[in-house]
Length: 190
Image 1 (spheres, rainbow, N blue to C red):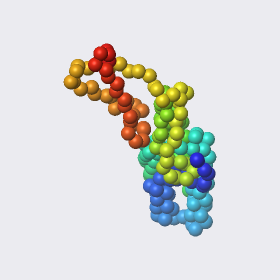
Image 2: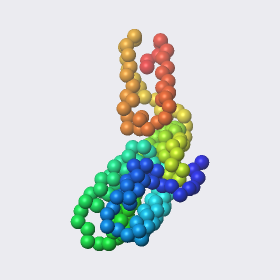
Image 3: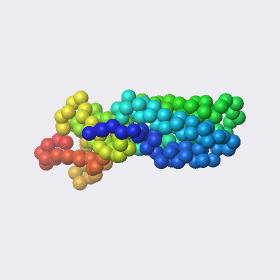
Image 4: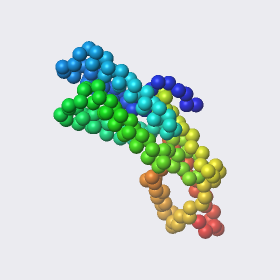
């Protein structure tokens, strides 16, 4: 069950939260009001990150979260190293909005390509719930819900070995052990 809360996937990353806090405590030449304004802008950004996440299934895998975190962190640092002429509040609005666009871009790709990649059967995928910031299993039921996902012919010599390809694109996304069944009869041609 995926509930709701005030946290979003980008906010779930402690590195991002600490980066924002460190920035607020270290920025020079601003008033207390400026600091309060910046904190309010960041808090509002977390709400927009939450909305963006929930529009796109509300879950994220660890790899995608890492990609979002590193890209946003890099952009945030680069943004504040550039010469600024706008008020600091406007600059903060621009960079946290860029963070939302980064989050959306990666979530769109994850939902299209990485979430529930199974073409057959049932898959339990480890993801972070963007509302609770907790990892859990996301149940992926394919369009063909059967447990029997087809027959793949392998040829091998008696007493020889067969190597199964565990490096398929979806294989690293599953949780637990993959269960392979091999059937052989001495008279059968397998």
